[in-house]
Amino acid sequence: MTETGFRSSSVSDPSLHHRDHGTRWFLCLLAVLWIFFYSVWLRFPYLRSGASIVYSAKDTQERRGVVFPADVPAASRLIVFGNSKVLTGFLPDLFDRQTGVYSANMGKPEESRFVSDLALLAARGQAPRDVVVTLPWATEAPPPDDSRVMDTLFPFRKLPRDLVLFGMLARERGGVPALYRYGENAVQSMQQNRGWYFIEGQSHYPGDRLPDSFHLGTDRPDVIDDPAFLPRGPEFERLNRLASRYSMRVFLVPSYHRIGELGPSPDYAASVARRMAGFPRFTVIGPNYFLLASRYFSDPVHLNPEGAAVYTTRLAGILAPAVSRPRE
Image 1 (cartoon, rainbow, N blue to C red):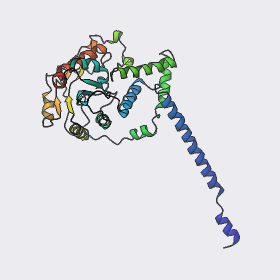
Image 2 (image 1 turned 45 degrees about the vertical axis):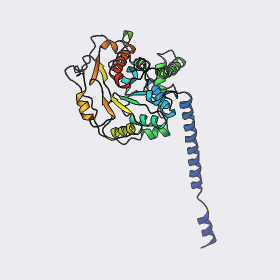
Image 3 (image 1 turned 60 degrees about the horizontal axis):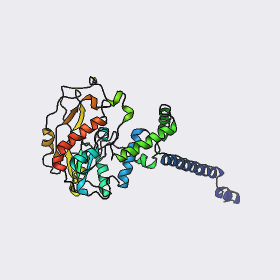
Image 4 (image 1 turned 180 degrees about the vertical axis):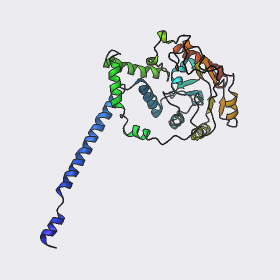
């Protein structure tokens, strides 16, 4: 090989250096953007929508293991799981005064898979004695979903959308500082009320009350709904294992609907009880669901504070014989 040939084969291609240099700058830019958006997301947690703020705050409570105070014994702990109907419908302080337990409302907007939340609390030393379930668990394995991975890697990924929505709403709520303080106060109120939160933004009627004549075209007053509590699927198997491992009792209780939304429920959910027979950790209490007057609702789905007191009192009435503890 000639000297010229040797040199030409050993000298690096300048274009490769250029591409490597460009790649490094691109990665550095991505890192800077990630740090910037993460810092904004972390520094200003109340720039999100109301539901996202509440959801995030409850997730934080679970991760930190601060749902129950350290001085509350496990034998006195009770958690109510469900979606936004529990979020707006269960008042822990009122329930506690009627039963003598220490309860927490872990209802989350649009959340039906609660077993992971319970497992996380148990791992943090926050396992309750009693678990109250108002919403059937999923019986099928969830489809492949990379949202949790994306939320872990890019927790701020919805920030651009939230900023746009926040800016639009701020014009109606007295400006950016006022709306930001509103979100901060909402989380503080939710935490003080141990998970209860009134979804004020969806209420559009005077006094936060639906009129007595309110109805929807989808109402089915001639139909009796049967809650789909079924002892199968990975969620149930995991819940059953958790209940056995941590000596927890699981109570399946009624949710609520408007009068006229469904037909009157039988006094006892016998079909659910038959399906759950043979699983001693699970107890069915009460009817399929409660029917409450429209005036107790702030929107077609969620209760106003007065309705929450009615629903909580009804739950306390059917659960008290099983969960009540004498006051010390």
